[in-house]
Length: 576
Ligand SMILES: [Zn+2]
Image 1 (cartoon, rainbow, N blue to C red):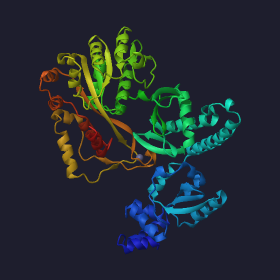
Image 2 (cartoon, helix red, strand yellow):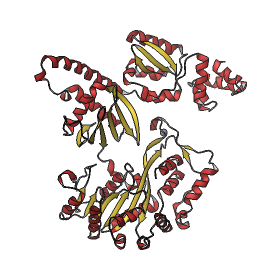
Image 3 (cartoon, rainbow, N blue to C red):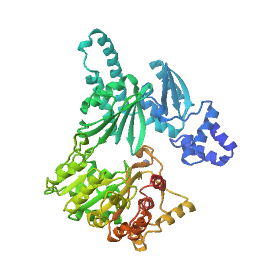
Image 4 (cartoon, rainbow, N blue to C red):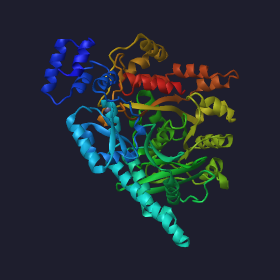
């Protein structure tokens, strides 16, 4: 019997008999001892590997994936890394730190010895856990190799450049137009599209340049590049987006489009001066993505019906509210997409334009030359529009123009920054809009937040639902009118946890889903709004009495339907 099993028996974690059974099972399957112990949840993973560290004498290490440098990954081919479950972690001088799940495996040791002789490095072995191994192995992949190749030629070129600059300074081209830089930037963009990232951050650090990707709302540290390559990469991106290359002290905004995998993709670029150099953030705007349906975005039941009804009306204002990054623009684009039919004139005023839609007249506002939302809206109204989208009704003048447009026979879509849906009522009154006008102009208000959608491949039914959790549900859902409750048709006890699998990159979540609160403006609400002692609580209570589902309620109902986890809903709730 193995030392590991013996130790577990001594520690009374396993009985003699169970250990023998386990041993038998393992011998007739491809599974290792560690995998079987973890699958059967006999012992927690971290403790198991700490114990294994003690038995084998290899130091156990928990590796942060961001610590793994791209450069190190070249020393062990991906196939060997996967097969023997060993990953390079760091290269210093010519010593490679290697993380291994099975350092005692003689075959793996042999392969490592061979690679070390061939590539002339010495190595130091650390024991890592299985989960950690899978996290790190994600860093591999052909794109990583592309990165290495691009980096290699970029560094080579930069050394050449240095030499030639000394020889013939007058003749040298700007480095940013050189092929290796172009290639490097192309690889950075391609990686974003392949990984379905929404943003790319390229930021200068003290001794390196960091490239990070935002995937499903979270920033992942991915690649580090040598500091000296940073200015050339930034310059290349500025050239692409028509920004001033020599201006590095003030922020600049621009955009460009390029072809990735035969698809035309837009990138919105913004530069920002930091004490260490310029930081670049690029938003990836994948065309066609906005063509999702309202159902895809997570609208259902009463919310879906209200929103669908609101765009059927011949005129009126539809407002989306929520913090930055809550998906307001996506919701408005989805509505525009439904409204975008032959024979209607759609004009937008945006800052910035996030997607281009066929048949829609997009217009970028330019406050610096006196073309703001208000000025733009005035000229748009002379363009005989049917449907108008105004990026944001941020000031009194724009707010009034938007209301006026809605009252004079246009469908107007816009956004406001308020925490919840009823918050737009006091906000509009603050802007000087008479309360009695609000019900006739405002058709619907959609407040929203985004949360992670549970990966359908690995989500797991919660086994124990605590009384605390039951209390949260009962308290939150109490204000839903009884008839609506039965209509909503959710049953208690169907809650799921995020787990993590290959299909969701071990995140447990795949994509995001919106939580919504749709407010239908009514006479009763506007009467309440005239009251000088107007309080938002009062408005919320009245709206709920009329059947409004709050964001939190929508979230909890979505959790009961297994679309997201309670943890995600509560986390989003903290931001409110
Ligand atoms: Zn999964």
